[in-house]
Image (cartoon, rainbow, N blue to C red):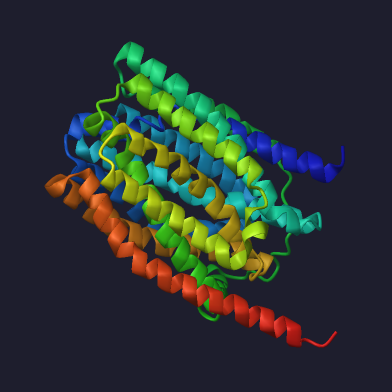
Length: 402
């Protein structure tokens, strides 16, 4: 086996062993059991994202300055501690504190994960494989989480304890985190990184001077906000509105992930097949349809659309970040990813808390429908602007003398 193939497989192993989220279907139900308010759950979750706002960019700078492995290791440890303390929490402020630690972990993971693989592929001169490899990694994570959700559903159903998956999962995750030492740090020239402030300034100017990157960042925000808000409400919707028990919820989450992984596996070239224009149209149309069906079809059959949501969740990152990575240099990649996440978190905090307020006042399904109506015109405008950028880039490349 070639050295490059070994490095990629080690990354897959790392993804697999750190993706055993027993708690995935149950963390909102655990908080709901103790807080008894959808609105308070969104406030608790907003604390998570407020932490992301404050620390995502510094985490990205540290990733660019000190390397990807360091931030990955630190992120996974903090992530595990945050999950554990969330499972031990029963009061509002305890949930807030645990989400702070949990979010710190995510900041470092985001700043190390995708940039690590892209820089590795650059070093191996295989950057054209980025989308395929990240989709493979997503499939691995989906399948591991599918098994975890089924096991988590069984544990909760047999013990009656919604906190148990949150307490057990961190021990498994920390063992998986040790595989980070088997990863090889990609060779990236960091000699020009003289100060955090100047480095961030260069990365920010790179974003502001590129209309294509701005459009992609904003479009991904629209997609991710929709996917995430659905994720926050999904378990409560299934338990409260559809009267499903915990084992059924765990098994349904398992099936969502398996079907999503299978479709993603067959759709590895979805970006190439659809092209840069139609790929974005597909992503938003899938989210829009899923929200619309949940509102219009008041029966368990509406769950079918959640499979589509999981496909979007898995595919959109590799596709959109693939487009972004083609337009940035390696030295500032992690910083630009952090800027994108920073903007996303600001928007999400506002949207999620608003959706939580509407859900408490009008109902979960109604709040999702309002969100659908609000995002539609924004997404359509961004798609039109993106198509113009693609046309402009194609026109410029044709005019370059050979």
